[in-house]
Image (cartoon, rainbow, N blue to C red; front, side):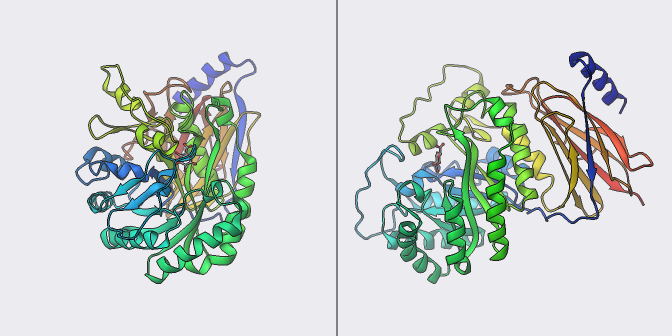
Length: 478
Ligand code: BDP
């Protein structure tokens, strides 16, 4: 606490008039939504399976990074390359798929070996799988055979198959999509393989139409999200809140709740076309990612799958060639160079793996998984900051995210009656555009961070330097 006041004093010198005076009042008499255990998710291109050593139980570094992120995560395999994938076991005739701007140069033939390796990876991590099959090719029998193979090989780890990736890019409207989707869905459903969808790009109306027609055959609803397309984008753009999207999520959630289906953001990230260098892969993305996940958790979204993977797999999904020759001896820079800019994890089997800044933001938000959100009244005091709270058994969690590029804040959190001492942990970095040196004090989960105490009025004051986040964990008084 003494350290916090020293921080605040230093902040006053940098900002005339002192730090923004903010407050967050928990409204514990109101019940918030439960947060899914599977909040943190990842998404990869199907083409990532071209190297069966990538998603393999023997890829210990990647297994470890997944497990550390979540013991109950969901891996979504799909993207543009899923709509250019065929199954080696399929014996029927297949049309040649022509590449276009929105797709890879050539068809990828998936072999059982890659699915067996993936099954081992899922067992080793405890993660479940969402797997996308090729709708664009227009051969339902191929989709059925691949879905059956995935279910046979992966077993209970299969959460659902999705049919088509962003079909809004190639079907003229929802009715055309539905007509193409139906023969796949009825065959796959009849085979006893669970389905989720529609995995559309940014079409909220498609999700609602789909829910109305197909809720009974589905285990979840889904769509994608990107803030914008690269090379658009900037740190300031990313850190501003996307209120229009949250309004769409609320609209989807009304439908999802009415049909009793969870809603997942099956593919999401900051900027499409592989991400924006200097934005998607720097510390700003950690603050964005943590805030984005918690804002969506508060609205009831069951999982957010941040898209990523190797540069080769993502560039192929964009119909681009790839030049990954990194002329540096620094191993972490080389891992970065072979990875898509928005990926939460960098590296490949040859070079090893490391977390990107976004990964730390996901770790922070994932602390809320399995808890119940507690509503609160936030007064930002003029700064760009957000606050969230959640209750898990006898532990109260509060996350404070200062996304302001220039204003420090001093935040009074109140409504904490009945809770005593706890720990305060910070997420910070040297600068918003730092690619490395991210500090996450919650990493060892046991006694990290500094001690914090609630005063007799149920409040505490926390300094929140610009471009940083804090997470408080408080224990109920005996
Ligand atoms: C999405 C696609 C994915 C791409 C991504 C991007 O589903 O395959 O890699 O866009 O543009 O629409 O980065």
